[in-house]
Length: 190
Image (tube, rainbow, N blue to C red; front, side, top):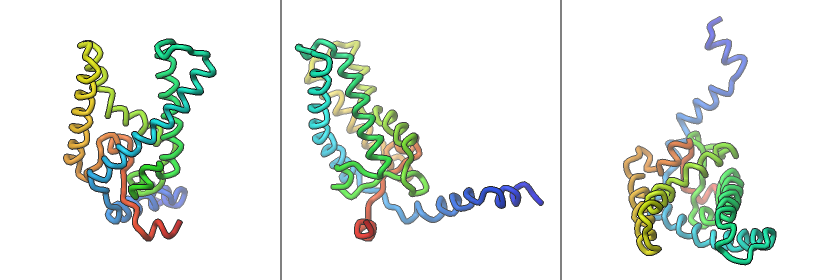
């Protein structure tokens, strides 16, 4: 008996995954860049509420009287809160903004993503902001200049998705995830 036949008898899962890899992605459509960016902007607006509640909780628990006190601890706390928010919702398939714009995050085979894959996606999604923020630091740019630099980078990063074969954002490609459109049949099935 060959090694391949033994592996199939022991673990039939790779065959199922291979079939999913060859059949599902062709039926999954990538949402347009406009829809993905609209969802991204809506997500940003929703994050104001998350920041407000987390900031209030942090300030109350740490007895912080001035916003500049414990600034780095607050930033670390928000990073963790954002991580919990996104990892939990992405592992369930959608955030509220993604649900509004009929977008779902799945793995390459079209299956729901695991929490570890959602965490990897969260860490890599900081490529939307980290490069320009690192560039702002040594030059001591003003607030307006910093915003222009960050928004310019966001536009460049979004347009770079046009060079991916499936038109996915690069952090999705690197984390093994993809954004797909939710069809009416899928919405009715839920």
